[in-house]
Image: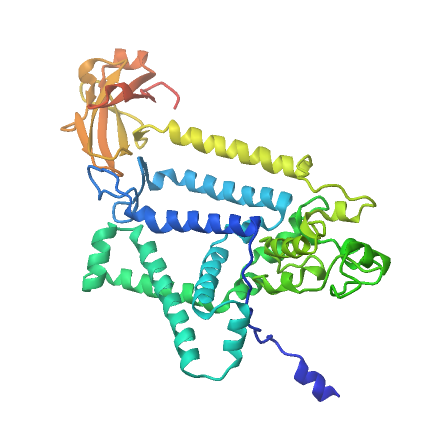
Length: 478
């Protein structure tokens, strides 16, 4: 007996292939709409033209050699890393906010794994047929039909994976030239390596592993339970209605109408199994809420189709909350957002999004930093004049070369010595450093505690920036 037990227990469970059945309904239409929109954005965006003076005419370009991201009319530099931090924070809070309201809706409709898996299943259905035909093909021995259909499916999967990888690389260089160079063998080695890795990983994740990515690889399905609350909407099976007092049963003669089933104590579920057949992760929602469920709603469409065919009320499987289902008289499901946690997520989301928009909209065309050289704080020259030194750093955030003029206010005109750099031209995304010194007579130095350095873009004088700096002299505490 112990030997038999050892044979049954294993570290890994062998994957059972899932052959999903196609279904129609509002959730299926919504998933298809999201897929088409997401694919249109991802695959077409690198081809969208956008006139630029100093970069390829591409709307979205991650220019790594130039250390900048070009996103339509916005240029993002490493100095704007705070924007990336805000985006990550907003994405995390949005995920928590949505999960608290409607469970794993992100997984069911917007996750990259879900979108690509959905597309690969569609390819499989178009070549191999509907679920019964695919099951039959899987079970039959290898022959000409199976080789052609299975081989054609995997070939199209590989082509889709290849185009996915090539499109990803296209975001980092000029797309038309990349395609030409890639085909002719003149692209950079990094392009071939990246496309190869992404082709294989996409093919494995969306074509071969599918639901295993969600079950074993993605951590979200595991920790989502901490964000669920009794009021959270998720895909549920109404067991009270579906099971009745004597359980579910097929709709045979004498138990087809609601009146007949209620008389016999049978539930509304006719045990057709369609909710299981359409599930992309292969679970039976009638077993209760499970961590594998991605809340895609396809089982709702399938169940509603069956309910319509028997003239039963819809909603045997529906988005609902555990609290509402457990109540004596369940009401119509609705979003319960008036909760402290949900309101907190919402407030944080609005504040951080508002700050990000404000930061982007008010960003100047350049940054400046003026530091006083403090070793020594000042120098007393042979004629008694006092000299302070400063470092002026200008970072150009515009999309073209800009020339900056440096001047001072609050000191005599000739007191500011910039050497040969009264004006400095800085390339986009780069910084220019100017060594400056200020020389004042002892009398004037004693009266001057602060003065202003003005940095003015010559092509946009209205964007001039002023920085107040300190002037040190003997007898004054630093």
